[in-house]
Length: 482
Ligand SMILES: *Cc1c(COP(=O)(O)O)cnc(C)c1O
Image (cartoon, rainbow, N blue to C red):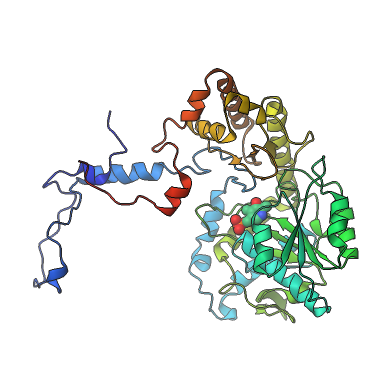
């Protein structure tokens, strides 16, 4: 069988040509600095079909949501409708320059204005700001809004941000980047925030804000959230909502009405703008009426029949070049307009149903940290596999052999052996069933043939990498086999 993994250099045959260049029709001249030129530069000599097959094969090694089920928890990999790509590539959107005069960019500004309104409405808040270009960047913008508001009310000395210990790592990182200290609060036995511990953390009068994810990264809806917001406000703090993944709440729960002051949404997760490989992203934030004038510049407003860019009165400043990742905004706008209010509500209904279907089918085999219904994602905790010498990492690697992208592993940090599955609303029941079947087969293998799991993945181009070393010392150079 042909070894598809063979590198291009190893396929080289002296004298074989991929292309034939036309005869030179300009006078030849010697290259400058001839002493720097190498005579024996090894270049692959391959035919055109070989090189086409080689690169086509490489392109197919990429796993994406268009190739298969991608149950990555906390990082929503839902299907990205292709219609959005058509809209984003309309010349009026794709070729527009951010410095174009307002008169010539009314359409783009209108789209941004309507998206601002839609996202603020979905969040149940007053104003939306589109410039942040990632979820973490939205957190950073949102915490700057809060800091500016605290300073404006003479509370600039406050330094503590309270964060649940299950939080996404970007939350404490953001607080630190803004110069705050983090006070971590654990969950109670049910997975809700421990209210006693929250009151203790608030007691010193130093709290800037609580940063909290809803549903939590445990996949659970905190039943005390209204009370939590009330307590934090009473202590002079604001409530920051990490709404990176809004799949459980869309069209059902407005975070502003629960008491949140600021919420960021990852348009590249919840609102189907393709992501992975580090971007582009969008972490639009929505804020309460009280905080609206502190937002980053610019916001789009509509006055005297014209859309325009404005700087809010007490803006904390600029957070990105120009207006954010416009292409993401077009796609998110399409998503919201295509679904409408009823469609968004259906999204959250199916997202939660799918996660609970998987939870119900697999909870006996894989174990749960908290025995209750989940929201849009389910966190398993298969600690009982350890007696067979099997860890969650082994399960994740074995799933690759079954053709699935692994779920999120070892996050949230507070759940032992966490395997976090987010099926998303865009999958069919058949897909969920075959994933469940693969998981059950793997659970059988844990008992009968654990070595198969330790050796997995078996069919991928590389097996288990030393991931830390691979990132720090990537092996990118071809060397002649000896
Ligand atoms: C993904 C995520 C973030 C960070 O978003 P990025 O776009 O990766 O910066 C923050 N919080 C939660 C809960 C997330 O899932």
